[in-house]
Image (spheres, rainbow, N blue to C red):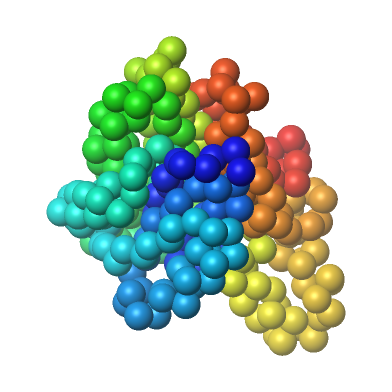
Length: 261
């Protein structure tokens, strides 16, 4: 229980990778604030199960991070519900698929707001408390597409790349304060969203699951295997520990060799 007494906010954690990271932190003893767009009644069971499994306090806050008011309200609520807000994971994301010429401006602005500005504002509001306590861990969820370009995903590539710059800037401003800021760089992770796309491939092409996974990852992860979301959570917990106190401003890949090729 290395993080007993600490508090963590994970944005975009109603399911998938965000929830997996929240679970890993709860297992390490952290009190948790989950966040999403779902109604609180739909998240009650998840919060209760997480709390009961690891004997920690778990709350859920619904908030739209496309507006500054939504981010401010989320951080205020998280700080109220937690004794301390020591770990911040900026995981909330939106994405739209279209070529540049046909990309709707409203989707572009929404991606900048949710994927980038919300992360900046959340850090801005949580840093004072971390500095006062002399300890904090900040994580920005980037992606392989923060280091590589891909067609028809200009919002995602742009914001994930920008998060790397934000990570480095925050790291340089918090040196020797007991605070670290790192970017987590997952490849294709087994989440409900990815699992749905795998099943679609199985149905469309009549493939067995293992063959569908390999087809989905073709030209991406050389291992041919999806990343286990729980392993990303384990990386976050390690980076919260004393052994990682000198790791800051880094991009931490967990992508099956995708960036090595």
